[in-house]
Length: 248
Image (cartoon, rainbow, N blue to C red; front, top):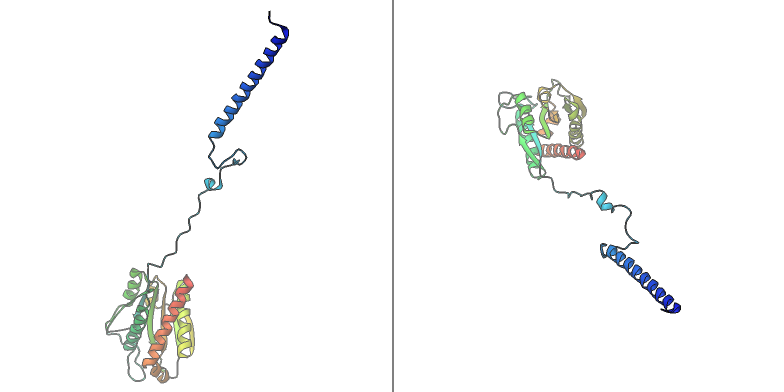
């Protein structure tokens, strides 16, 4: 028969062992759970929701690259061939003046890598008005400009006037007109809407500029001079550049 005191000691010892084993069990269980966490995480820092970068894609900023497409400018020398246009005070023909001017504008734009200029005619040939507009449409020109010199029975009439047909061409006409008037100092005869065939058949931004009156002796002398043509050509190019800058 085991004494009562020894029996109680054994019971206490069993209870301590049982508590120890229970504690060890919970410790092992907690260790397994913690083992599944990433090294940088702890139970205190676990997020309640998914990280921000997992909720929505990070926006990608596109890199800015240089323009690959050049700005197409179609330059039309008014008249030509069988159509002489106006005959000036000194007997010079408008078709020769417009071709000289168109070539100067072409050369200026050719020097600028941003532009791709093209002429409707390069010598003394006749091109139908509809065909000039068709070239602009098929080539998908950004700018179509037709260059002219004006005429009137009264030699005292003078000035620069510029035409457009549709609203998509008004800003172009205004920009070129402004620069030509400021450069040559001819009378400002305004920008006007005109039902001119070369503009009516064009679906791209188009304008026709009457730089001055060849029948006015003073204006004709300036228009036919090398200095006058160089300045007028530069004014047209400046007007085109200002118009294009407004589109960006």
